[in-house]
Image (cartoon, rainbow, N blue to C red):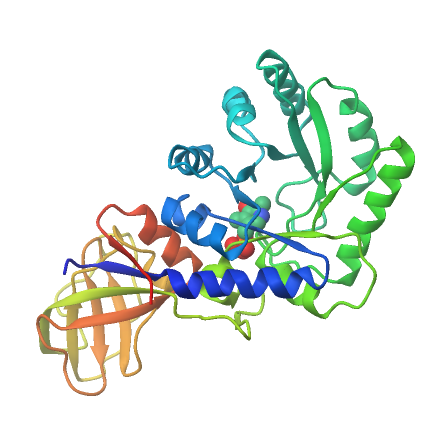
Length: 354
Ligand SMILES: *Cc1c(COP(=O)(O)O)cnc(C)c1O
């Protein structure tokens, strides 16, 4: 075995996806799995197809191309508003992109016309989290400017919440999106077939809301892979929260003082933590560091505490038995930890089925 190692249980991921697709379909909401945290890995894409996914969403064109090149023919949505420099690739590789800029949509239109294809767009509405989106009061004027562009079909509208500021997708926000959809349809005499109400953070709203809503789609990553909801940092009942784990190997284990000695400046990362003397401690070093993973997103087993990290070392203190050199320690991960592990070439990825 090679370490550090990211273990991905594809069976659990498939069950998570199936569970959410099933539950939300009872509310007439489709699930578009979001593949970005797995960098569009074809194994994960295939698992999601088996679970019933009808479309994938990713924020990076490279990930979308990776799935296409692996023979995955499921339609794909680019979730980050396209760069002007990549519109030709976008219209070739994606059926739909999420958009917020007129100049980009004009450019997509020209590229689509040149390639003689039709490109679908979803217009993102700003609902208060202040990431992407057209301000709600400007949406009608925005659509007026793009409605007759050739080779562009307005497939719907969408919103993204709970990302930058943790603004909650509640009944008020979702009703606003719903009402806007109705207003746009009345104003322009078009039908919007996708009303995309957000990400993992919208699941609780979707499952509990009793209001009539036009929202009929969610773009979901975190819940499928981690079984967690980031807004309240809660486990989602019915989902596995241990489909993904990270294992690392102990390379040193010693009893040491907790207080460093000598004159002290900043550490290698420009930081200076406050330290108090706790006497001697049982300290272990794992061969895992910031070049492998966003350390703040790791949870160690009980009885162990992550104290510090450098590029290549993770320092852990244990309250029980000291760790042994060669011993493997297994962590659970949050979204940023998973994203960083997947993006690190030093972490061995192992996909399995149970
Ligand atoms: C990443 C992303 C998502 C998925 O978010 P999760 O919290 O992983 O479900 C949805 N929509 C957009 C626009 C995103 O960038």
